[in-house]
Image (cartoon, rainbow, N blue to C red; front, side, top):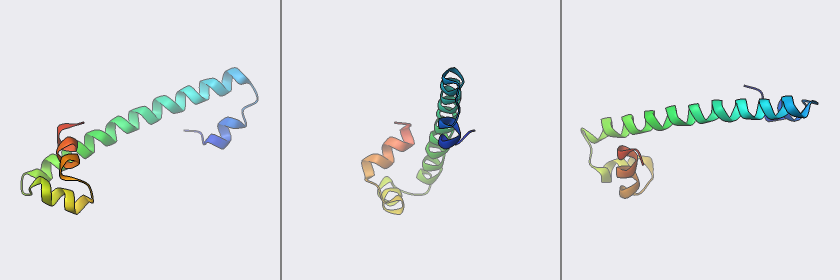
Length: 72
C-alpha cells in the first residue's frame, strides 16, 4: 500500500483518487481482520477469565470487554 505522502505526490487526479480508493479498501479489509482477531482472542480469554478480569487486563470497561467478545 502506498503511504499518504506517496498518494499526495501522484500528479494525475484520477490516479490519485484510485490510489486513495485502493488504500481505503485495503485498510477496510485489514480493519475487519483485526476486529475478527480481537473477537476471537477475547472469546478465548473468556474461557478462563471473567469479563471483569479481561477488562482489567486490557484496560477497558467490563461492558466493552463483553462487546468485543460479541463482535460489537
